[in-house]
Length: 169
Image (cartoon, rainbow, N blue to C red):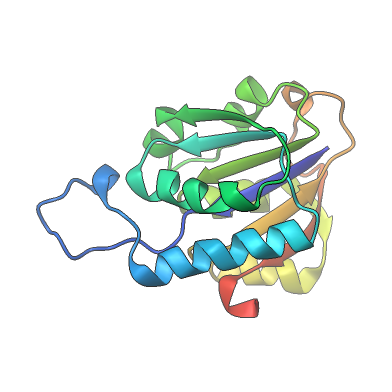
């Protein structure tokens, strides 16, 4: 099974009156989300289930991915991905992932970084170091697991297949 951990694209801080959950993407973020969507399509990184935070910036990131998504996917918007953005997302993946072969989570940092580092037991040392250094907006970690159901997910059992940042594209 494959887990795709996508941090939302760059958000706009221009309106100080907006609540954090309501911040939209800025122009750079919109472009990065489309670039990442194209890359994911070309690389065959297509999900059959997507768990997405309810924040405006994560939903806008998702909206820019969907035109490039070539198959039907079950999409769940989860407030808990926003509320738990300071924590690891593993519990939510176990709870909502089911048997999805390719599960994508669109969320926030530091939870993205902590989840990737917690779950990846093996992988490129360079990619692991990149994640530890910074998990930038619109970055994607791809982690493979030898499990039959996401409820079996355990720390350190995944293989970090790749870590891609928008500036790499």
